[in-house]
Image (tube, rainbow, N blue to C red):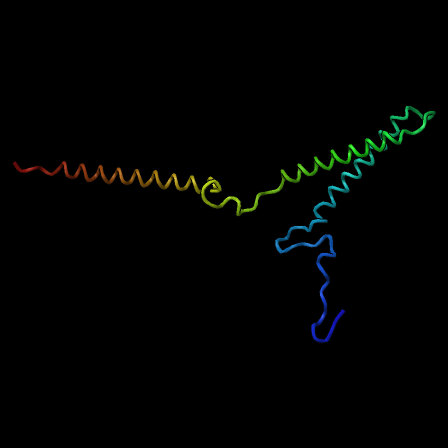
Length: 141
């Protein structure tokens, strides 16, 4: 839709589930669609296998109740496992490793400790050099 004063109208980004925000991350629907589909497929397979094996043969009726219970268990367990794996695989943002106090990065602390040790060693060398140069001059008596 276009009007002469405003030009072409852009499409609402909320309508697209696979949209990307400014940092290149997938939108909410795109990030959960894969794990949900995987968990659903695994749950269907587990439910069907449980339903067929629980019947005990072709002479007995299908156990749909056990199949539905197995579907639910497979779905929830696989969704939790996939979510845990996704959380473990995500890197922390860079801004979390910067700051002061509790939130200082260990690299910054290490660099500060090295600088303190070097400054202390330099100060001791200078004091030792001043102490030995004053000892070498003979005192007049």
